[in-house]
Image (cartoon, rainbow, N blue to C red):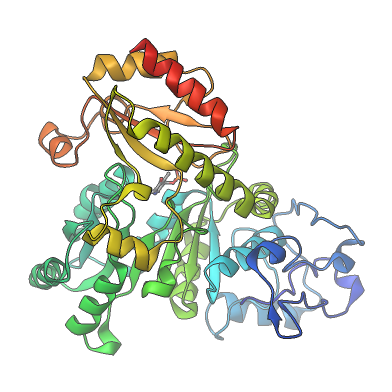
Length: 436
Ligand SMILES: *Cc1c(COP(=O)(O)O)cnc(C)c1O
């Protein structure tokens, strides 16, 4: 876990920060409790209960020797990262508290905050992938991630091989073998559940396949986009992933009022990614970090409520005569491979699902236009319920053949359930279905 020297910006105090407890007696404190105070010492900020927002581009060194020591850390001349704050492209107090608290949810060594989910993913790829390398990934991925790997890194001589999200160990083995023929596999990149298919990736099987395919000192890192179920319902680091990536814009931010990204995981990998972030400046700003600290205080409550709401709404929708089928993780076929992965990897079914209406685009649009509580908007994970039509919106530019393969049909409505009253949402959906 990172240290909490962070608020020593007022160096006149000249004293060590008070360590925030992570344990009382034998009791290891829960993530929910730690979100309220961990990583921040009020005494270093005039007794302020809440961290101030540190709007500064640079930090004053106590002495020239201290400045040199800090730079040794930030440039990697000395391991362990910077001992103090230098310049706001590298880090700041608000971002450091945020990073301490993000790491808590997955019991990670360390964490990094970014200006968006995509800037986190781009910084990760730039850290590990070089011309001639091959990225092995699950598919489908978030559209911008697919573009970044195939189209943009492709221009720099990087290739890729994918396997379907729900792949078996044999299929994963085959993808790795194919990837080795194309170049050095420098990163294995996963996304689970996939959007909009909701297919879960067997992270344990991926780890076993990677362990079997490489000597320990040449094993590529395994990173996974955990935006949809993390950090509450899925903790992929515990299933064998090395890095967990987040669009904090979604459930973690949770109020549809900011854009940010995060990465948690193994210390040495995080240190390498931090060097890249320091160079290209993809860190989030202090105001966004502060807002994320506020969001983290209610993360567990918001996600739990949204999850309960989604279960009730899906129960209502599943037997409705105008509904063809529902892609919701709470309804996985007993005994299926997906249900087995769910049992091993997930503690909740989430609140984002796919609703297939009987009919086509006309029916989907009539339904969307008739909603009164649910908002017609893309994105997910906010306090308010959102609904959209992927075939006509987020996935409009996906080739028809690929759309068919991914079951992105014109009658598909993607729904992210929020924190409203569940029965009010059911009334809204019942009413909109009646209009179809
Ligand atoms: C939104 C999203 C992203 C991109 O995050 P931004 O914060 O919009 O950059 C990446 N992956 C998944 C799964 C997402 O939903």
